[in-house]
Image: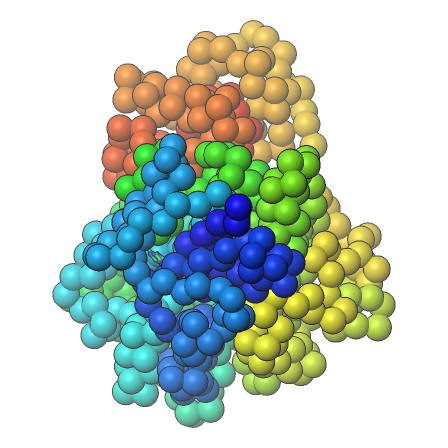
Length: 418
Length: 105
Ligand SMILES: Cc1cc2nc3c(=O)[nH]c(=O)nc-3n(C[C@H](O)[C@H](O)[C@H](O)COP(=O)(O)OP(=O)(O)OC[C@H]3O[C@@H](n4cnc5c(N)ncnc54)[C@H](O)[C@@H]3O)c2cc1C
């Protein structure tokens, strides 16, 4: 009998998993079905550049189907719920129910702006924006264009969010953008974050914090947004502190896909699916695996993490199907280029146990780590073609192993967390 | 870094941010004393939160974040900030005798 693998979500994780599995199994061995609610695959890292006119919204979208190799079935339908006990996926509309032997949850994270009081009220998409959605990023481009001075506030409501460095990158790019326009002295840029400092990891936080300072960007740490008053132009913290703005760029709360909440036993309180952080098998059922932003694991929600997870995930699906023990090979590896403006970027590389360190990547003669350079900016730009042509097809990237490299890192600087 | 201190007359191990490193050393008297040090007198509402996050830790290996508390503890986020000003999840975890909640990365 043919084994049926159903993959929920045809974004970064779903696509690369399907393509990797297709290469591993013949179509008569394993039938692979990918379900997504639409056919528009967005290169999400490109959203950062849209507000500054550095990227066109249309240039970062491609059809999902076309990213899937031959012999993979694509079903365009929204998942209604998963019946974990019956091994069935129920779809919305007329689409027939899908039975599975192995289920891969790859449905990412969802923005839930409506969970923050006032955020989607008066002023939303007029002076309160987000660049985390294609519509938001495009609307923000127009608003920035019209902005001639005043207070620009960038605010993360709460963690977890996709690509936790993106809001900082937005601040750096805004600094550059207004400098180029010759009005930087008329714009006050503020970064309000619930974190204690600029970033989650101490050494990187220090570097990023001093970069904010050097660029004249005000940091408001430990700010927990309770309410957004769009009409009055202020963020109101739960502790009653206020941050006034003329233009606010808010990264809304994130949750898992809605259907997870409608599937008894599948997700946690935020609709993410708990999984073993090293094998990526869900804690829900042995035949359910999780990849990417949908997973409740202590790794960053990033495309690079999703990519590194791919190898472990597909190996473990194979072990599961062969009745073998799973391998705990995923180490939480993340690798992020951080745009700092003026054609420069900084690179950080870390895993569950090692925080981002200075040095070079992946070895002693590689890219500079935790230091801004032009080379890293080129790396960031290169990520887009690499995404479409190597990452989604499920190829291993040259020179980039899925486990974190240690060769070029300066461990002396490390003060391990905990 | 762990330091040994005396809380409510008993020796316990705390990390450098004041969180218990060994939750089995904790008892309710210690909770009251640690809360008092933060200027908090524990009411039933406080205890709801403290017990909830301790239970989360015992079941899942990490205490609850503010959002999780707001969704599942029965105490809304606004009230959490009234009960435990500034950092509800961390303060509640400290009082509950569990390690610092593993925030999100
Ligand atoms: C602004 C921004 C900048 C970023 N920058 C970077 C970066 O520089 N580097 C980096 O590594 N990462 C970056 N990321 C993060 C990266 O894009 C994500 O981590 C990655 O795409 C996660 O892949 P995924 O497969 O988990 O989710 P996604 O790619 O989001 O895919 C999830 C899919 O599930 C589908 N889905 C959801 N619910 C349903 C349903 N009910 N029925 C059917 N289908 C459903 C969705 O339509 C979607 O296609 C950035 C993200 C953003 C928003």
